Length: 386
Image (cartoon, rainbow, N blue to C red; front, side):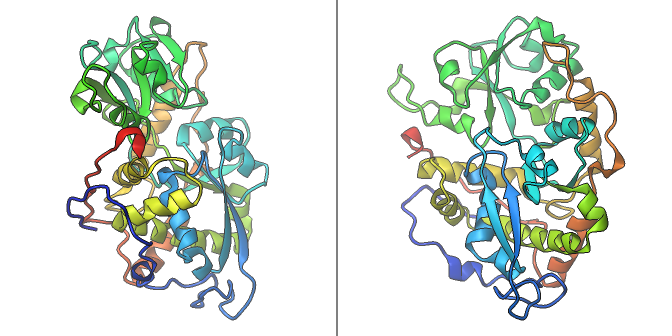
């Protein structure tokens, strides 16, 4: 997965032929299947519904690549990818039986599990937190310890727990800051309404770097900002994971086979996104992303950084990181005195059993599932992300 330095350019057609040179995967049941179905002999494809936690964008490039390039079909699956613009809570859709799998952040689902949802993390796709808190370079906000007395932006909806976990680690009471509800953009920050804005490495931070500095007439530069990465704090929590129905995993053999097949296709999709970020960004745009080409490529590239390299194999859940996430969720207290969870989650909240099976099968077929040599590309943002 080596990349030379590349700049945003007009990209031609998708390199599908090159992608399809990857070793074909086995269909559920052990037969080598094309698009003929799970039985490898012309049967119907198994329908699967995947619930995303947001709208189509580079954050989900691997899933759209798996769909577009036929990896799901090669595993005997017909996958419907369902977006959410905040109107659907992924773990609720899964717990209610509306979908088969869901993508969601770990602390959010831990809260749902404590409230009675029977869900299991079967693949931890993002190995690192991508959440930032961004302030102006001359603001004096260089660390979480500087939040006291400041207006701190947060989207809410469970995205705020890293902020409060990091503050708790610094001994800061949530009442010492003013939490300002922030839209999913950087407008309030640019207008001076908040002192430090919440941002994802793959989205809102790029929005700043593709905005024009009115003082210079040029795009803002990284040196114009202080950036606090929650990955570098005690508050870091695991984010995008694939969740499954616990009861079905324990008792439904067909669901178990589908789970392994689904994970194999997803892994191949993320490998493709790592090796072909430009083409993967085109796929997400075609899938309905509203971002411009340079912004979309930035998203895919930054998302890849949260996934690769994966020394133990993509999707494996690191117990240390899991425990740190649980500890952070237990310690975080918001301005209303609430925490995402109040007790340790059950042992069924995560397992590496199914991702390990998928990784083993792919490794047996010669697929590199660790991305040991992965290197991100260099992306040049254009004004407005165009």
